[in-house]
Length: 424
Ligand SMILES: *Cc1c(COP(=O)(O)O)cnc(C)c1O
Image (tube, rainbow, N blue to C red; front, side, top):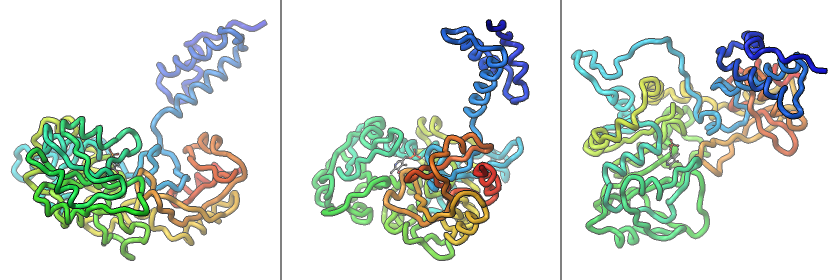
């Protein structure tokens, strides 16, 4: 015999301690009660309550929340790419007010102006993400006209960004140039005609072609007499990395950067805010004042614009680069540059599992062949599901039958919480 299941309202009230709003607790209670009355159900009242509590816990885990990234993937797409600080009380900002004149301002006056300064460009515009930056630039500058792209650069970035499809969406006509492995300046020259609006140079950010290859640098493309738009994607600001005391790390070699690409003659560069720039999700279009202005005035710009919170976070990042202290103040660069010895000492202090050498990667569809030496702790078997249940949840990888927690992507102030989650 089973007792009468408790009422949905009674169960929901019993779960009030979870902190979830009442309607969500009612959903959890309904699900538990329906399980109890469904085929094969017949749960005891305490079991219904326990089931409702489990469902409510899962609903709570479905909310956005801070997690400890122990994967060693610095730009983890599932974990929001670059880690950014958002620490600000409710309040207004001068988003579109010029505080000097008291007149209407422009949301491009702050973060975008600083990004332009940091890129060494005349102007810049900030949009929602890298894909939006490419879409807007192509729509404004090449709709109903032809765009030349090397066959070696028709890339797909994870999550459905495919260069040919973005081009089609913009209304531009793709003209494929050269071959998959070799494209020469003469190929571009032969393909250019009266209908050509521009040359699009796309950084093959998430793959490499090795062997018998040839591609054309922006500097040479600029000599064609057509505007060159370089979609850099990953958003390394300056190949010299003046914000790092030791200069550019070896693993950045060959990564195209905004400053150098613009200096080489690109009319515009586009890149993401949350990849190697280390900022919030955003897309940056930087380059000639005239072209940026045309992008800004297009109706699509309004639909693609970011909110004030994003612009505030991006402004902080731009200021860090201009102060040249991004190596310390932009978390991505601080994490990427932490010496292995420091990570090893932290791993020892964690006091759980075995201290191991491991390799971090940049991730986020950047630097596909790069491994950064790192250190962490290893636990036998796959304990990732238990770690995800910790508070805060810990996300880790399994390698060769062991769970590895790479400390490079764990903030030092999270070490104690990690140690607690790892404790037997
Ligand atoms: C990442 C990337 C994009 C898309 O940027 P999102 O910010 O993810 O929208 C576009 N082009 C290239 C080359 C990229 O690497």
